[in-house]
Length: 364
Image 1 (cartoon, rainbow, N blue to C red):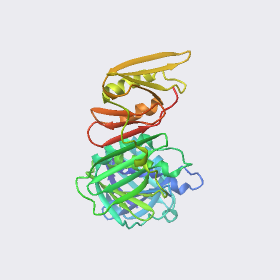
Image 2 (tube, helix red, strand yellow):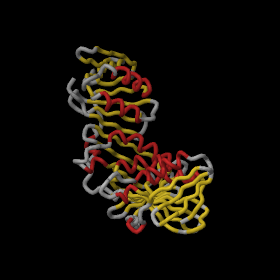
Image 3 (spheres, helix red, strand yellow):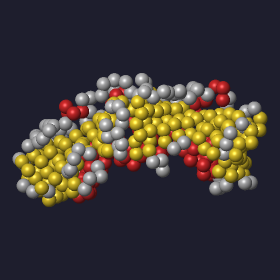
């Protein structure tokens, strides 16, 4: 293999490919990136056996061929090089020379024959999602994804595409986030699939300047395509919780508050919610009082002027969960409603159902 490629193009391709590198020391080949030079392109592939990524970049290929190089080391090497043409050339059966200007590295390579085949997926359903829409939706629900592998279904994001609407749902059983938006078009068929959270968190970031992300769904895999990249991940099997049943239709106490003011106040008061101390909310007349108290540390109190309806209420939440829910929204105002100190509280977009965040209370 012998090729020349712009340093920036190679680094961009490596940035995408390194996201699927495995840290399993028992399978060294999975810590490598398969580089295949053919025609006028070089294709980079990586996999951890759950996620597989393929990215293609333009290159001046003098000799076609394939080689597996240590992914993270190669990325660090290329990142350290000046902005100029990078030359990669096989110097022996298990070595590749990487040179740029007066700098050169020689890296040990592995056999491409040992690298897992890239999954061939034929999607049964496909939908094109505007990248900014996907980025916004993922940001709104990602804080509610469970990190506990004991319940795999909760480590995923439920994606529902129905007509011209797309909805993302995530829950860790302590909170629930729902976000939806317009697709800008209409999907031919309804799609409902649970995608691993870490995959959907990465793809919008990697998609960068791509206008759209195409999602294809098969029996057991999900394919996400953007720009010159193909991202394949398994779909999570199982029944996602009935989130609609969990969200109350109304509350005995309702208020509307500036999202920015609530976010800033919650962050300030949370400084005194240490050692798992809760953040308390008290609704009375046209005032929302936020307070936190940590024994032997101190107390914080802040009042916000809000528009209220219904009965006075006192309720307490995990302070970081509350801050996460408020900061994930991009609405100017949020509506909050609750029925009692022992039932969930719900934050919603003031207008429409573009964002809903349910949070379980804690004992004050």
